[in-house]
Image (cartoon, rainbow, N blue to C red):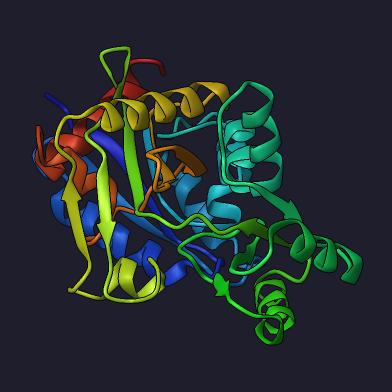
Length: 311
């Protein structure tokens, strides 16, 4: 039987490039070499360097696995490019990816269908910044509108640190704007979503316990003190799973994803966002949740196989 020609796209020009490369390395490490004829394509930081695209077109893969995070890799740009070239890829399409990357638009969409999210608002002017403080008070959370891996995120506890946090978030993407969210005191949880045999499944949620103030970039990818605990069955777990599937369906996602939420002291679930391309590193959450049923290699087979079944 001939092998499936698989292109692994990784790297890219976003602030999450390092984490994307680590995920790409794990995909390459665990991919079934007997089943796939694969090549790794490192998307460059220089957007004018298009040699990778020429090489991809010439190689003619049957399917692409997007080991990408943030920026053009996750905001629908790469899916749009691949669709134009009629090259199948794993994961969500252009619209779901774009909405999933934009925290403000995503919140509006989810709230419109009755999904409870963290409260937040875009901050485009000094007047907006003042309004956010008046509305939410301290502490509050400042983050870039369209970025991931907690890069540029700050929990602000006082007026003195507020505007520096706004500028920090703004510096991540000068063409976008920060968002300010009401702080939710409670554990952060995440729930992987996976399509298998045409069915949308919610994996067992994970409670994230960190040694730092919050689940920041280092805690996500490097800090071995970070504890990722599969949650035992409970009514709360059922609510987290239901919310994850509702988010996934509301945005029209495909293949797989991961929904991050906060749980307050009353057990209320507040969705923060969906990751349409979840991290795939050795510290990442979707592979961790999948270990209850499958190996990393089997998870890749499910994701790729599901896409090829609709090619």
